[in-house]
Image (cartoon, rainbow, N blue to C red; front, side, top):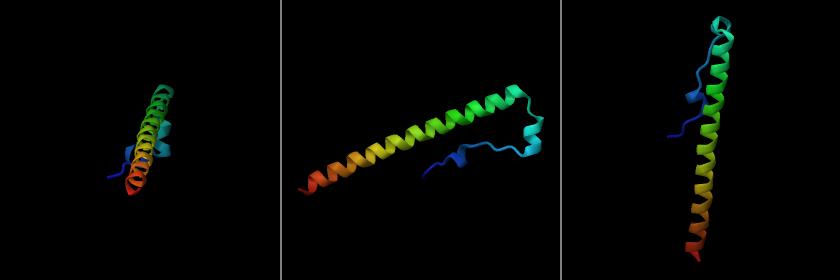
Length: 62
């Protein structure tokens, strides 16, 4: 099953966000950025695997 950024993200309401101090907001931003990068890396690896699988499939058809 596919995982999206929305599946992993933690969202705050405006009221909740207003209650956070600067350090908490920075931590949130850092964690969300790391989560995005991790998911992007997994997606890139999957895309590269799909490309390799396609090449192998075409080679086997010959």
